[in-house]
Length: 206
Image: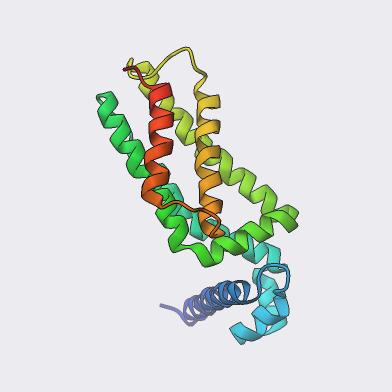
């Protein structure tokens, strides 16, 4: 390996490490101070990096938060994109129940940073737009699942699969934020049981 290649690899490694330190510092500062009170200066100082170096990676706290949102939502995406090929109504109900449970449990596991996201969505146009994009990705996957069930005669075909998907995600999203903000009086198990029965009894044939 040439000295030039060694130099480039070393520089790339430092860049990756700096970005990682900024994201870790950003996570901690956001959780500690909240989105509005957190500043990019606090994040840079916590990461122990220079201002010029930091701004190579992120133009400000909003951009850094978006990357954190994407990282956290990857686990949610994994849950939403679990294989959904039910052979019966019972299979579908079991799969949907499991997805809903994992979705809400993951929100609780990520509660601290999810609270920051909730605040950012209210006060940052960038974060609000990002959450809208995230919502649409979930709705598209749910819509495909509903269409799959309709095509195989498991679900009612007189219902619009996209509208069904939007309503199902809205229901889950409401409970997600209630759990994150500690405003729900019900356990995840109770929530999942009730919303799944409500959803599947209306969508799937008896």
